[in-house]
Image 1 (cartoon, rainbow, N blue to C red):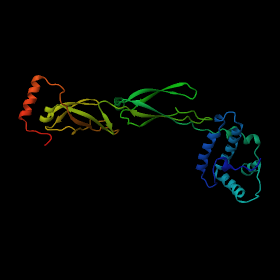
Image 2 (tube, one colour; image 1 turned 135 degrees about the vertical axis):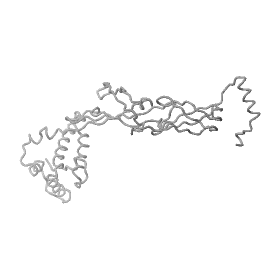
Image 3 (cartoon, rainbow, N blue to C red; image 1 turned 120 degrees about the vertical axis):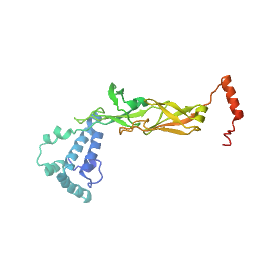
Length: 289
C-alpha cells in the first residue's frame, strides 16, 4: 500500500483544521460513502475503510501531530520518501495485526439518523384550547406510520413540535433522528390572529353608532359586552383587553374590534317613513362634515 492522504480522504484541503472540523468532515464523507447507502459498490466499501482509518488518526491530537509532519513533508518536498500503509500504522499504533486493524470496532461508526420535518393544519380554536391530532406519514419502506400529536394550548403559528426519535433510523446503532411538526393555524372566518391579539368586525346599526350603545360581541371563548360611544365612525377600533389569544406567559392579548356601520338592505314602510323624516329634518351632511 502507498502513502494515503488522510486529509484528502476526508475531503479537507489543508492540515490546519481543528479536531471538531475533522469530526464534522468525517460525518459528511462517512454518510456519503457508507456501504448501506451504496449497496453493491465495492469501491465505496474500500473507501469507507480508508475514511475510518483517516478518522482514527486525525481525531486524536497526538497522532494528528505525528501525521501532520508526514503530510507536510509529502506535500512540500519533491521526491519525498514514500510511506506504506503498514509503515504509517507502525508509527502511530505499533505493530498491529491486520485482523485487529480491520476490526468492527473501527469500521462500524455510529451515525445518527436524519431529522424529518412535516406540517399540520390546526384550527384557531384547537390552537387556543389545545388538542390531540393524528398524523400519518409514509416510511422509506412504503408503510404508513401514524403518530399522535399533542397540540399545547396557545401554540404559535409556525411553531414546531418535536417528537424525539421518530425521524429516520440511525446507522450502526446510532440514534434515530427526530420528527419536527410545523404548526399552520388555519384562517378563521371571525377572527384574525396578530401575535397575541385577535381582530374581528364590530357591526353596528346607524342608530347604535349615532346614539351610542352597549352591545354583545363574540370572543374566541364566549361573549362579552362592549360600550359604544355616540358618534363612532366606521373604521374606528374598540379594544377589549385580555380577550385575545394566549401570550405564553399566563395572560392574553387584546381583542381589537373594527367598527362597521351596517345599513339595512330593505326597509319596512314605517322604517322608510322615519328615515325620510330624518332626511328632511337633519342638517348632517357627511360630504361636508
